[in-house]
Image (tube, helix red, strand yellow):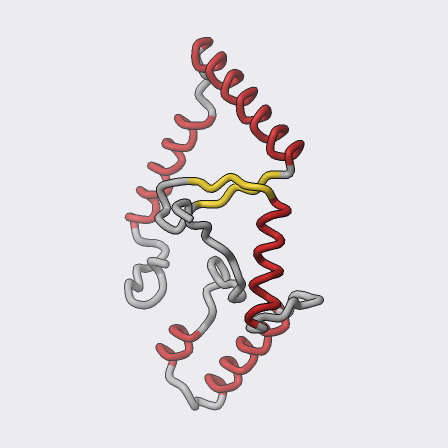
Length: 151
């Protein structure tokens, strides 16, 4: 992001080399330094706890969601959650279930259109860059439920 609008820092700038070196040192220290015996035991213990939780969730067919306030988790039956979603669909008729994912097709059409507009000089470069979808966080709108724990 630093090489593009609005920063425009050249890739051969020394700050990139320094940052790259610092990042490499940090990653080496964080991920390649051997754990102490005590930390290895803690890690194994936590892995066992996580495995146990996963097995319980799968066995009881549970669903876990962050609540609308974001500080709590809702744990409930996946079947009950599915029933509420179906009821919402039938009551509102506001959504349809797609049989396939049109994301890539839509994304390609948007990119082609922007390229055409830019190629014919119908939009400026900054407009082109601003309208170009960010592939790292681009997604289709979708329905999701945030359970309310007080209800």
